[in-house]
Amino acid sequence: MVGELPADFLRVTSSAEQQQIAADRQAAAYLQSGGAVPVFAPAARLSVTVAQVVLHRTAHGITHTLHLVNCML
Image 1 (spheres, rainbow, N blue to C red):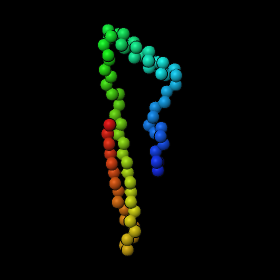
Image 2 (cartoon, rainbow, N blue to C red):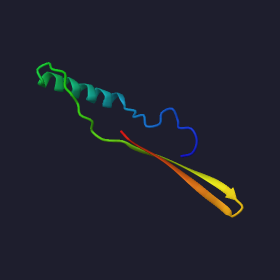
Image 3 (cartoon, rainbow, N blue to C red):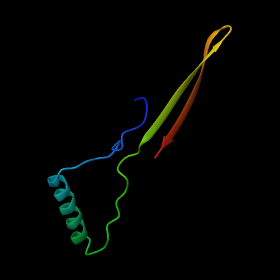
Image 4 (cartoon, rainbow, N blue to C red):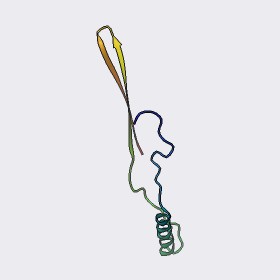
């Protein structure tokens, strides 16, 4: 992908039915825990790598510089 990221990049959308299922699960977990607020652990990790290549024209030809940024969430 080149250029600006769309506003909804990496946004998860869900239907009304999926939202209701999630709310039901949360309510069931709350009731099963005796009213204590459940603590949810993260389900996955996200790794993002951004690469940029800069081309340079010199008297000897074209060279390049590679910039990498890696972020794990």
